[in-house]
Image 1: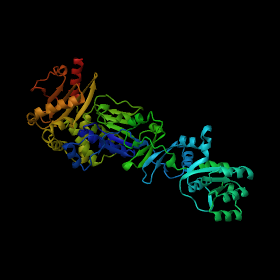
Image 2: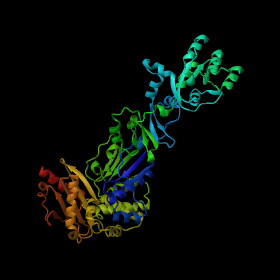
Image 3: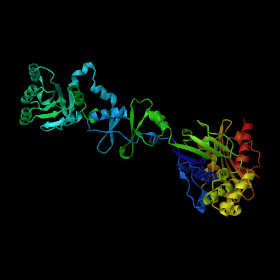
Length: 548
């Protein structure tokens, strides 16, 4: 089982730092196979922090939807198209399969061999009993199917129609029966009736199977060799030998050529829809070049996912990685409003009113008395500094300050110096296209039946806003329309003056309620507002309440 620790879509500094830090904490606590991940791109400031403390960015995972490859049977039991179907009969019995994929020399799947179809062939209905004597097979496959031993002559390897004849009668009766047979296609199955065997050799019967491992007399062997007759010894009785001989047909002859196959990367959600109304028992899973890499059955839909999630810095599914609802969420660490994702089982849900999720992660180490690696401590400092604007945000608590001081002591770095480095790196307005500014740190919310987005960036001054104002407003509207939001906002915060500029595009029934000072069309001035979580979001939800 892999455990993925992941922050929200469009990750900010705190989301990335908390994911790395908590994954390290879980590993240090004894959990195996834990990885930190992200479902969006990093930015310049995050890259700076990672580089400064010598850590790699979390692995990128676009979605966590369970897929066919997660639950399919990888130890594939298949049958070659040229193999006799008795091999499939053995596998049906031993492995309890109801169907087997049939492959060619290149491991490409060419069809499905169904146990039901094979059963109908071996035990035909009464009206078709006469056909049960005819088998399209080679003598070599018949000998192989009955586990027989060649006594004399050569094995014919050509696949053609052959008639199985059982000599369970008196010699005189068989003599009359012999006159009615198509001799070249006859395969005689007989016990120790040596006079009947000699009569058949003289008549030119090409192949004779002697049951129960009865050893033929020397005169019979000599006569067979002289006439070029193939003699095969079967270890079974006559009835069993006949049944097994019918299973000498090849899988290629019995396969169903029209079948449904699945791609290994198909999501289980889509696979369930695709296979629901299909009567096929097994579904070949194909990889590159259509080669068989697994087998999927409907019962595989009941298997548990091999992955589970720990959410950090968010608790709403609208902000989580795609597919989060389809796999177990086992823990949540957050410091935002509760709009929690539903879970199937009780989980650890730690939601604390502090300024940063990195604060919560560092406190987990602290309470468990697990030393924090210096590099991780430095990264957690970055998360706290970024999310609390170096402890100046109204979301800041005494706990944030206490934890930040402890982390600074571990790293021997002054928080103020690190804050100056972080906020001087990569102004989003100067380094990103307007479209990417909107999505760099964007969260989706739902309240009172309305869905909306709130983006935020931090700048060291407002000097770049006027230059990009028009394009930001245009891209904000494109983003809102593309997602069918009631409104979309972008909060641009000056970390030095602790003021913000708010851009809003959306329904006029909403925007006309905004009562901050306007700074042009679609723009408002928000002095003293720096926190999306504690200041802006409650204000926006209050406007929604007034609107409705």
